[in-house]
Image (cartoon, rainbow, N blue to C red; front, side, top):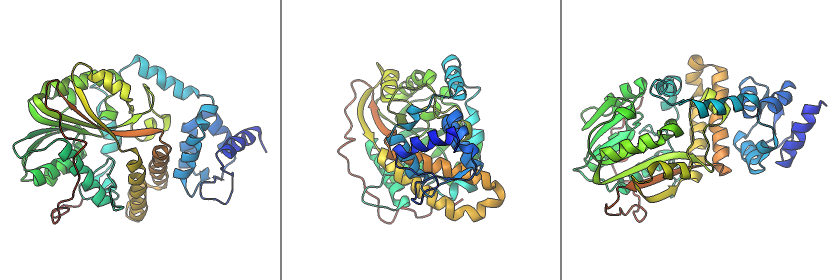
Length: 387
């Protein structure tokens, strides 16, 4: 047994994980180079070696949960690659206008066939709300309705949707509440689909960086986009939302966030899933909004994201035979590692997801926390087009 194998084995044993053991979270090592790679490269080595087929595990989510619960990453010295990215993010604005399109091209433009294979009919690529249901489709509609109710959405409202994805929220708001929506995005693939998805509805789609947004809106909503803004731009984002929101308006921000203030994200996630991504802390959000907004409510949906990711993974596996020819085996291993490792991270409470309701100073406090969610019977998925 090599020295690296002994160290890795001892570390994993602290999380009750056995190398080549029989339990679902146990690692099955296929290539002995795995041990040195993980010790030298940390999370990058763990993710890449899985993509390369050097190890397997029946429950990656449980493995990651146990590793994080026992704080094993803190016991492994930070690798040079991760430190290099940390210093880059300190010096440069990795989410500048020139670089903003990178994540769109490398992730959101991968293919609508891929995302439709595991998402719900409204194409919600964000945390669902599993209140009194275990069904993903229903949970996503509960999330959509929760957002609309927190916004106190009215038929006469003009809503700005920053980072609109495939247009699912815009469609839901217009169909169920009769409002008008201006939706902004920089992903070509998403916008092309959204235009057709919301055809004949009062939705205007604009291919535009958030820094170029103008206008005056009754409500502003941004779901799952703030993770791509970057700490050097948090204040700019808030200033634009403040400028575009009417004095009596409501702004709802939903974002994944970290427990501590950081200026970079996991090295493997940054390279393979969300280039230049960054998870804000509550402290960073509060600082960016200071003097601009009143933080009316912070709702942590973190445990719901664990269930959402597991549901996505189950659907992805069922759909894989139709995707295999286009994407290949290494992509499959990358995607399942992404979904399951994130599920384990949320279960360990290492990261969170917040819905934050804000208003301008002097506005009437919205009844965001007292509202009850409901799915409107007979309108849940009628007429929803699949990709």
